[in-house]
Length: 366
Ligand code: NAP
Ligand code: FE
Image (cartoon, helix red, strand yellow):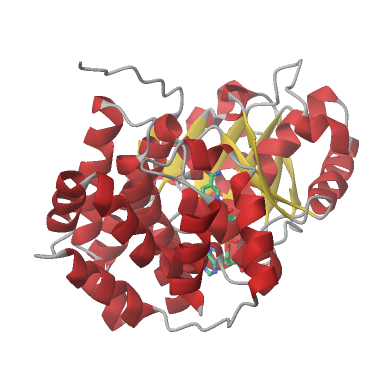
């Protein structure tokens, strides 16, 4: 049976110098803008200067809040929401990587639903403030997803807020803002995009529409894969990476993610591995597992990414990352238990079990 059900409410505006050209689009969100960023990347990327110039031209009053941490902890998000609340903005503009975009999504909810830890994990009663996003990394696709991932010290893991209310209203996508990413951030974020495309393509919640996005995203990413190994990135390559990331987001907006993200969260929480790197370490063994139930789909993905055999893609990944964590049996059991509690596992095809997860984890990092 065919299934093309799909929902995407984000207005995407794509191109070089697009904020300068299309900045008038901000006018409809009100007069006062809170600009949410991390420590330095919004300025380094050039996007902050462009947003500030456009806000001036449009007559918006604005204030910059630049304290979002990587893999934002819930407390960090609450603190920033309290600060922004004093300013009483009409809308938010997030400039940064997935960490900043996700923090801003949750802040937008907190500002209209009450600022507390409980609010974060409840379904929001009131509409959040409108959110405009400017990604400066090419990986999460958060600009088009209804998810925000936060670090929760209570459950000692990363947890998602998932609601259609937190889709951004508008995303400005200009790949020149990703030029300033160091090589490691470029590689890690690209591999996160790859993970979204693969996990989304194989997920139980995939349908004909998400498959179109996944395949197109793999074609786009394939053009940039050789650069990931070399660590050299042309302007064209940056554009392909941003497009691959966008298509990863368009895919998982429908499908969600699966076991790779579920296990990867523990590698980030307990071992401080960057999100994309954590996923990249797990992808090789995950693909062997998926190949048992969906061999034709795996071969289609492998070929679309520019490899003749699955082993070619696995070698590409293992050459990017050589991390050994030597996890103890106890650590493996803990991370597996945490992954099993997530909805990602139900969304993973095949015969899922704690044993399978432990095997994938052990083969990936020990
Ligand atoms: P990130 O954590 O947002 O950023 C990583 C680092 O890169 C930060 O130190 C940041 O600096 C720096 N950076 C960002 N853009 C830069 C630029 N243009 N030039 C120089 N440095 C730059 O990394 P990310 O991979 O984009 O986001 C990861 C987060 O997104 C994780 O929490 C992950 O779980 C989440 N995620 C969300 C979704 C979703 O659908 N919502 C999907 C996948 C992953 P600053 O600190 O100065 O900003
Ligand atoms: Fe991700």
